[in-house]
Length: 128
Image (cartoon, rainbow, N blue to C red):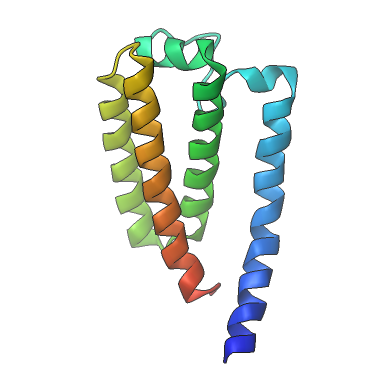
């Protein structure tokens, strides 16, 4: 049983490696300086402008967007809807930060922690 779990964990890890590598490589390109979950050329919201102007916030945005993408792809349909609702609620809370970099950073670290915990629960059950 343990070896089967180990095999499943390695297989899941290999399946997740490609999207995570793509996100990491995207962050290293010149266009990777902009947040990738929205277009920095057309944003007008103060929180999005702050993210586009701050490299560390842009990196947090890429990490959060990648985790969210992986989570939505690994979730069952009912759970996926809940995850999407949570994401919309989180975006509304992030928007309340305005251009406050500290507030935005806290919002991202909180959301990233929540997504990592959610994915850890999925990883524990293994691939389906």
